[in-house]
Every structure is written in structure tokens, then in C-alpha cells.
Image (cartoon, rainbow, N blue to C red; front, side, top):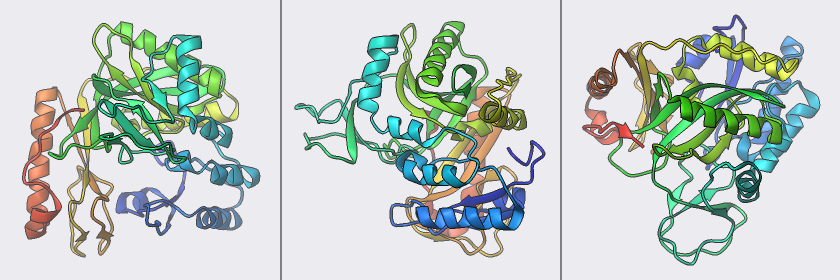
Length: 367
């Protein structure tokens, strides 16, 4: 997004994949810890090195700061961070209290969310504090004691979706909506992909605009942010989670450079640059995870519709993201067929190793 907006970015992440290296002027890949997370000291050192070499550079943060607001605060004390501040992330660490306030004072529908597990476990989820990506969510099968690292949320029925907004700390503009997808036969809550919705019903858009405005003012959200919610026809959207940063579904939208410019403007002078995107085609992506450890061949030639391409020789641990399959078509039916075909082509490309790394077939469906 930064590159498309005319900037020359430097990137720091845990992967150092090929397309990130192609878009960035320089890339630093931090070694992940056993929880597949970054080390705050190493991150601060990497940012400091860039500042020393290239002069004052603003920092735009992605995911994983949900569980590390102290690291974000440390960055903000020394550098210009364009996005939500650490206090936003700290407040989101107490979702039970926040959801109660949103429900009582603003009429926003939320599931029952609490620190103590219910006596009857059926119909409840256990979520890690500050978790992101869905891999930290698990169904609750037996009552568990209260924990400082987890909370419990009522499991409701409905279609899982996400919505994008631009906020300036006082108000917000709704940008678009996407629906979460599953493709793996194994039941899980990890993020496996999404397709964008060309047009949401006007009644839903009005409700989402209300939610976005309340959150922006209440939490002082700045820049691009998103929410996850459940949608049940003719009923209120149920707020499940708040992502105070650019989200994974952002890449599904056209004119991403304008969204990046809007993010910068909202974080600097609080201007809300907004333009409703013109969408004529369906677009989706599927995030593939390795079912077994896999090392990328040195002569690997990835198709152009593969994103997040791991570097040659990289070892992909079991359960880690392998790559992302992208697709675009005129209709949802054609899009599903295209994604299935591309998935089959990818397994052929991987050769014999694909038998253990990826399932033979996929079943693409709404989450």
C-alpha cells in the first residue's frame, strides 16, 4: 500500500517474504519466538537502526501489538507512530468491560464476554488476551478457572464478517465489508481468508456506521481500523472484536494507495479523506497454512496470483502461514471455481511434498 501510494517504505516483520522484499527498499526479518511473536527489544533495535541510517521516518504498525502495548508505547516515545496509540490497545485488553459499556450506553449488540468461565461450558469460546488472527480461539468443553491471559465469550450463530473504517480520533467513515471464509476441512477459528462484498444492505451500512462512529469517539481510534462482527438477516450486527490497525481484508479493495493516504492524513492532521470504492468484480484471498513442516525449493517459481511468497530455502513450520492464493472474477460462483483451480495448480507445483503439506481438496465456504 505504501509503495502504491508513492512512498519508499522499509519493512520489519517475522517473514521477510519475497513480495515484501520487492515492495520495500529494505526488509528486516526478525526471528520469531516460540509463540510466533516478535521480541520487543529486537523490534526497537531494528526501528532505531533505520532511523539512524535514513533519518526521521514515521512508523506504521501492523498486527501483534494487541498483546504488546508496552512495545508500542516505547516506539512512540522515541519515534513518530502513525496509528492508534498504546492506550487504545490497553483498553482493548479489557474487552469484557468495554463490551458491557458499548451494550449499555450505546445499544451496540455484543456477545456476553467475561473473565470467569460459565458453569455450563457448551456454547462458549475461550480467547487469548490480545490475540489476533483467530488461531487463539477455541471452543470451551469444560469449565476452566479464571486466567490472566484468557477471557470467555458466548458463541453465537451468524455469518462472520469484517468492516473497514477510517477514524481521526473523533469520528469515522465506513469503507467496506468482507465475509470471512473457511477452506480447510478441520474446524478452527484461524483467519483462512475472505471475500469482499460489493455492496452491503443499506440497513447494515447504517448500523456499521453507528458502530464505527461510537468506537472512534470512545476509543480515539486513528487511521484505518476494522471490526469483526456476526451478521444475521434482519437483526443487529453483533460486534465480536476490534482491530485498531490496518487489517488483512484491506488488500481486497481497489485503490489501496488512497486508503494508505487516508490513514496518514487521519493520523497527522485528523483529516478524513474518504472515497467510496467502485467495485465491479468479486475478489478474495485464501491464506494457506502448512499441515506439516516444509522447506521452499530454491528453484521455486510462484504464479502471479500467489502472495506472501516465502523466500527460497525458507523452512515453514507446521501450522505457520505458507502463502496466500488470490482470485478475482465477475461472480461469486466463478470466483470459487477459480480459487479451487488455483489451489489445485499450487499443489501440483509443490509436487510430492504437497501430499503432507496441504489437503488434497478444499471446501470454500462462509465462516
